Image (cartoon, rainbow, N blue to C red; front, side):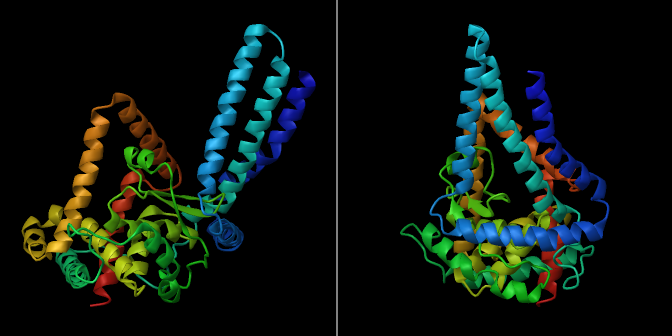
Length: 367
């Protein structure tokens, strides 16, 4: 047992040192920028390209396999303890799994976490500043007018809802960042494709629309969310593959990429997301101005925004009826909130909504 513990300690030492090095060096912006824009970018591009050829989410497969293995090892360990034999063998296998997870965590730390401490991808192309309520109103009007124009151009189903197919949305994603990369040179190249999640219902119940998994370079999307917002979600997750770590910036780049893509479904979806975020901010700052501008939403725009609101309201009601699911949702969101706060996003999960100043500044520059 002593020999096993010594070997286990030595096995875990390299990832522990890598993690310690990161936390010591993270105040050094130049080091973080190099790790993010060079080593991290190469990893994201290579893994995103390789996994793009898979018709499924490798993240889901690995996650499921890891959960099954962990459960099996824990059961084997408990049985061994009860029977008082085979304990060492079960513990060794469990230790191997823990070691593999530790090495994966060390890789994740260095290929993704530097993005929270590196200069933002909009640096040099857009000035982030405080936005007045009048400027919010002007930006909301900009996105409203564009959404109204596009509302009749996107496919609609028999009930008048957004009718673009999931497969078409994923295929068209290849075009979304072509123009944004020219406007924002600090964006990294990427060949990642959005992946449909089999566990989309679980994602909805946890109140997540997507997840970018740095270890496989995959931009995974929840295909159960209202279809009109799916292109925006795909663009948001792809923003991470293009070198955007912070969630508020990913929201901004998703909208900017959608609006400059030349793809109607993406342009329209980006407008809807901008209307949601800017509308919420303007409603709090000047309710009268918001009411006046939102009264001019086209019927299709109003329908798609309302479908999205009702969908998430329904999810909240389902969770409220199931204490176990509600506890799961709160645990997942609490963990993610803590992860964001631990990596420099003081607002945690609320940071998604802090894209408003970037969206408004960008829209005002295009008017």
